[in-house]
Image (cartoon, rainbow, N blue to C red; front, side):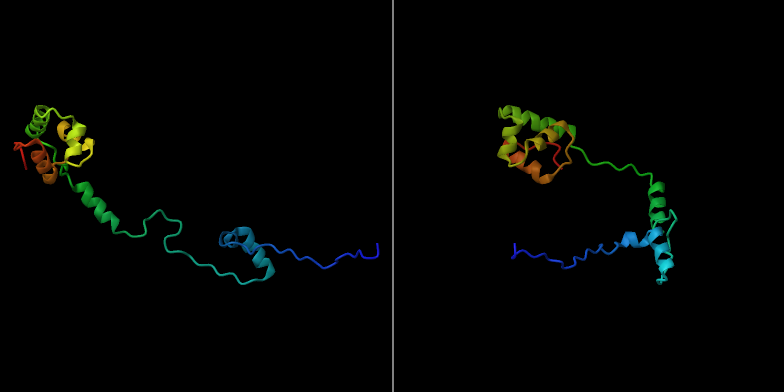
Length: 139
């Protein structure tokens, strides 16, 4: 029992410093006032208002509201989609096989044949080469 001794060193546990949000908290500000600490208050220019930071957007919004032009993407013409379908059927190819030949996704062939695709001259020329025909309605 003679070799046993106790360690009575003090252990100090400190709280973390308050975060930025905690320093702005009303309780923390009041506690700092009571303690006599210096407090700085700054009013932000647009604080508490529902205004955008830049008023330049209202001009763009007005222009967009006044713009009545009907904008739509160009679609594949009916003649072109029928020509692609007919040439593909004549060669006895599926949409997937044709897509593989021209190194495109099958979805692209499907969109061209359904008329939903935006015409792309490169894809049309690939289709012409793969199908061996001149597709009417070519752009």
